[in-house]
Structures are given as structure tokens and as C-alpha cells.
Image (tube, rainbow over all chains, first blue to last red; front, side, top):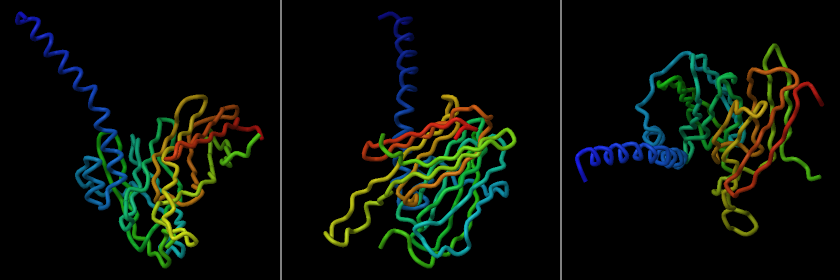
Amino acid sequence: MNRRGFLQFGAVVASTSTLLRPRIALAKEIDAFQATTLDGVFGALSLPIPEISDQIKIEAPKVAENGANVPIRIISSIPGTTEINAIVSGNPKPLAARYRFGTKANAAISSRVKMRKTSDVIAVVKAGDNYFMAKTEVKVTLGGCGG
Amino acid sequence: MSQSTIKMRVKQKKGQIWLRALIKHPMETGLREDKTTGMLVPAHFINHVVVEANDEEVFSADLSTSISENPFLFIQFDGIEGDVVRLTWQDNLGNSDSISKVVGQK
């Protein structure tokens, strides 16, 4: 093989290796839901701990009487928000949900989560290439895993 | 015709669609013990939801066992009367269901 052929071969190898990246990213997303600690969730999502933002609002009861059904609403007013990740720090698997918003959607979500015990509801927001977070403590008087 | 697992309301408010959905699903965590058999009830939960407006995806969610039984969802997105809104869910056992509504029609 002459030098030109070798260089072209190298270019093909370089470009196909990027095709492998989406599959690796998918494996990490599944791992994030399996993570059993907060650090594990952030690690699996490949995030450093995001900076706290006051442009993320978490509406949740201060005291949840039924941990099986805790209504939460997360609103991000950070421009360019594409993702809201909802985390319940005291749950066996803290990552509760990943919400993705198209350009037409408001970056706001109402949902109901299970909380095993008093802990934080944490919202990690992706806006552009940056990540931000907010958290609020919810006291749980009756744990929510059916046990 | 089988009953849908999804109750969805789409309402037009000032250039936006307000979508409220309630999906009938046990959202079993896999950690609960069946009291009669003493066996763990296997995990059975919705892991993916997609909302489309006029065949364009406006919202999606990856869910876990930390989402409550009979998942509730409320989102808002730009839209007008006549838009066709479809919500689809899938669960970890390969089940799925879908509902479609035209905004402004019953």
C-alpha cells in the first residue's frame, strides 16, 4: 500500500470510530438509571457536579404524606434548555426520569415520583452544552416503595 | 375496540397546547414482595414516552421505577387548534400503547 492509500485508510478508520460513539453514549444512559448513588448518577451521565441555578424552580410539597405519590413540577427558565433530569437522592436508584424538550415545548414538567424516605428532589438541567441544578428537600412521612 | 391505557386532554391556550395525560400502568419496581406468594413482583414499568404534534416529536421522556404508579404527565408546547397530538408509551416488557387527539375536537 502506498502512502496515499495508507492515509486514506486512516481517515476511514477515524470517521468510523465516531459511529461507535452513539452506542457507547446509550450504554451510559442505561447505566445512569442503574446507578445507586448520586455520584454514580453524575458519573454515568459524564457530568461534573453542575452549578446551582436560581432559574430552575422545583415545586414539591415540603412534607409528603404518601411517599408512593409525590407530585413535583420542575420549570427551567434557562434559555436553550433541552433536558430536565429528575433525581430523588434517597431512592435506591436516584435517577427518576430524563425529560427532553423539543424547540416547541416549554422546559417544564409535572410528574409524580416515588420517594423512599426524606431526601432531596434534584433537577439537573441541560441548556446548550451546559448543565445546571437545583434541589429541594421533601420530608416523607410514609415511605413509597410499597414496603 | 380495546380500552386505551391513556387518558389524555389537550387544550389550546394562547398559542400553546396544554397536555395532561394519565397512563394506567402498575410501575412495579421489582422490589415489592407479593404478600400471598412471598415472591418479588418483577419490575414492570414504562421506560419511554414520546409526544408528537403533527408527526413532529415535541417531547420525550425516559422513565424509571421511581415514577409513581399510573404515571401522570403535564407539558406545554406551541400549537394551535387542529394540531394532531399523539402520545406513545413503551414499557420494559415490550408493551406499548398510543393515543391520538386533534386539538379542539372531543
